[in-house]
Image 1 (cartoon, rainbow, N blue to C red):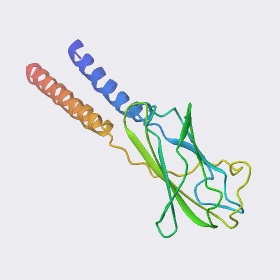
Image 2: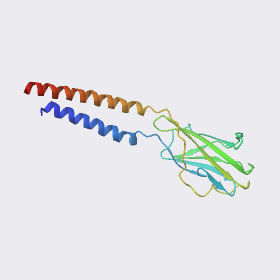
Image 3: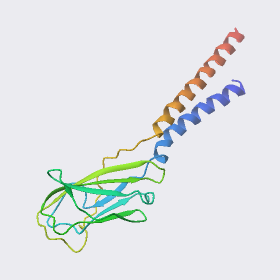
Image 4: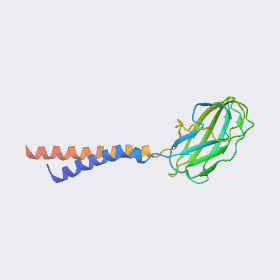
Length: 177
């Protein structure tokens, strides 16, 4: 096997290794946990909504809104951000019921990430602290992701290299005959 052929095969293998490892390193910031957590049924209203992200969102990009079960907006406070934690005050006079918190931040790589956290409570009296259980919620993230463009490009490059390798092998075997 010629040294050029070995180099090309190594390049193809390296491209495949990069393509396999890349998604983990190119992931956008995600919601790590929330309080209340997604789907949680509380016995009292929370005093605040707490969203904890894997990394700090870009400054000034946190937006949090809430709606009740009929889709009517709930007047909540403005979000405050400290490192990777976003907090929003929950109004004490909000009646018991089901609510959905909608959040959106811009991750440190510049891509918007958003999701929803549905929860409910049976008593309107606010607690003195946020709902205690902090479980990982299942956010529905929607982001404009440019990462998937790179993976097909790596695949195309691998196919071109594989074609070159095939031509070299064919040329070599025809020369040997």
